[in-house]
Length: 137
Image (cartoon, rainbow, N blue to C red; front, side, top):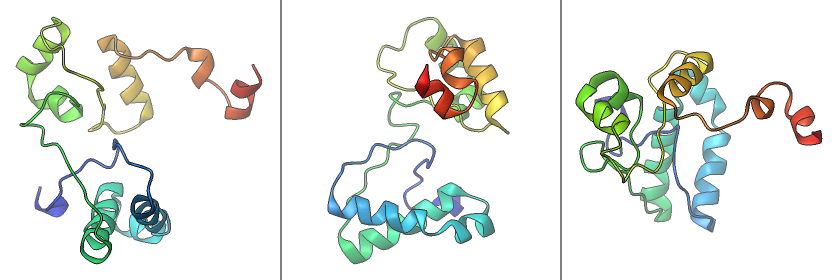
């Protein structure tokens, strides 16, 4: 989608090195919640921040295109690539590190789909209830 160019990164999942440049970029992203509410997109806001930090501060960014790797499939694969999903379920893809279930309307749908796929590994006791209660258990 042209809206998310040039990086086309997915703001729901990213690996970030802990250094001065990345801390500055993510601090800037957090400070732009007003922009997030206007654009209604974490992805657009983050990519604008990254583009600025690449240009002005020398930040280096690498994104993986869904066509280039099967390491990090996501909801787009689930919704539009049935052959890929059949191979994943059949155990034919041994290089998948993480499945990010985006392209869903809300957390409940996301969890239901991951559980149906057999790809949800968190115990219910860790997700039901306030964080403080979970930490005290």
